[in-house]
Image 1 (spheres, one colour):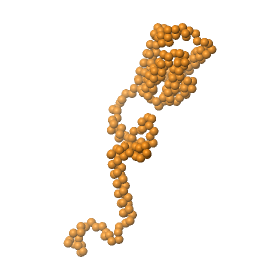
Image 2 (tube, rainbow, N blue to C red):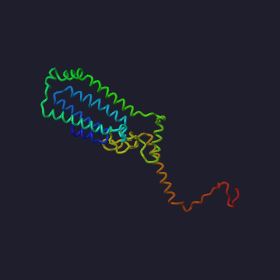
Image 3 (cartoon, one colour):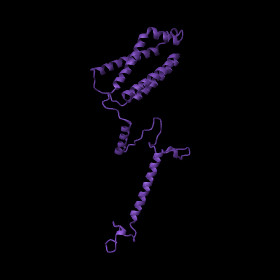
Length: 261
């Protein structure tokens, strides 16, 4: 859990930090199970590790994974204030951990006298009901804020499918980049070509896996290559010795004296 928390702090990419946070939450659920709190264990796995983290990843993807943050402070002194709050939070966390390790837990049996679920519900919906509602409102505001930050006004119409395909073909002509779609996640692809057939278990290709249009294009290219080879061989050997020179006159209109026949 501590290693994942360090990865959460030191990760350079937001997605890696979110995955580290998933590991932290799973470890926290295991700690709940070790403390005989099955309800918190289930809630931690189902709600936080499942739903909340998927929401975090969704917001991260909307805002942009590779978006660089600006180093310009819009609010003067916010970095200093954030550092002070971070130090205070670390102090409070250290004191809480030290008290939990040095002294035995008091009042746990009394709180769970009617069961862990009943005791948790009593605290959550009586003493801490306002804090619970404010937390829910805070999360909703955070999601709305992320949507506002990720929203962009469209000044022009979005490109159509034909425009995207034409752009791909231009990039292929200019840079040689393959115009096809990249392989889907989780697929180990050694190439990205639609004219490469699938392989049977014995390693032989499957002709039915190649589209018909692509097969015809390949056959036409092979015929053109063969015709070019034949033309090259004829040009390399030269004309035959008894071959007459080329003329533009028709045989039936020419005579030995040069006049009409």
